[in-house]
Image 1 (cartoon, rainbow, N blue to C red):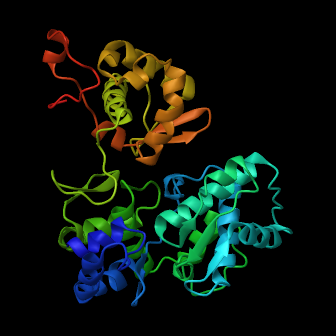
Image 2: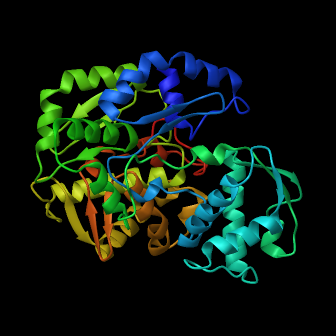
Image 3: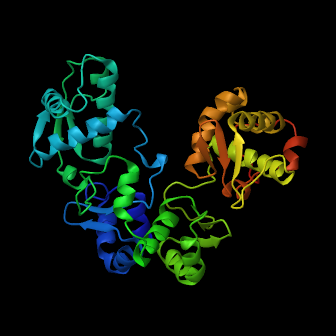
Length: 383
């Protein structure tokens, strides 16, 4: 269903961004409302200003943060900016100097800011750029980026009022929550049928996969309800539900797209697929042991060594960005990228390959090694 996929793809929808899509999603609401309530347990905000699906995951993952944010201070300043905007009338204009003074007041007792420090100014620039990007404020005069170089830079903004819909409505007291794990416990107190159903559907829709180890409750639910789950997911977002003894995946068909997809055209994707193929063979050769659930722990040093061997064998086909770099340098980007797609878990000195690493493998066709004059920066059609 295109309208449901649009809710997944967008943080929120407004008439200013896409009037036709905004009204199409509102008109289709009866078609997906029951699915949201029964299978996902998500809250849907729908009024004349905005349509927003509060996509609370079954468990927090690193990639679920705001992509452009770099430091914990970014999130602290975002909260301060939200509090400042909440005090502004919809359509009210204000100056950057007024906002920075308000942010200083809010953060004074928690994380004091010093606008003479370049890092603090850049942090606020990232927050304001994000707020502008999603439509919480509009720049009327000046450039937000200028504040990073000059703290006397002035910018005129206007509040759109969307700040009131940014935060998730938890419906309960969260004052005792101090970590991601605390919020997860808040949502999943007990293990009744509704909680298990919501966890399974949310994980399959929002994350690359669903794994289980000692707790087989989710596996039993998937096995028993396989037909209904597959049918509902296909109706809502397309694709096919694939269940294995160690995990489940909602796999989209060629041409279907919801959010970010793997594999894609990024250079890191090719490296990940090639490395997964090599590691799969090494595990089958019993070079590395695997657990009963098909997870493969290995040292970080071994992982980098295998990446180096993969580079020697297939590096001619890597993009120019990675071809000449040392394996240690490539690993700095590759490990978090693969962790984001649940191909591995980064545990510091230990890297744990997940079952999906044996499933998502790639290889260059033989003609690549035979033909001359290939441009390695061009993707191979059948790689």
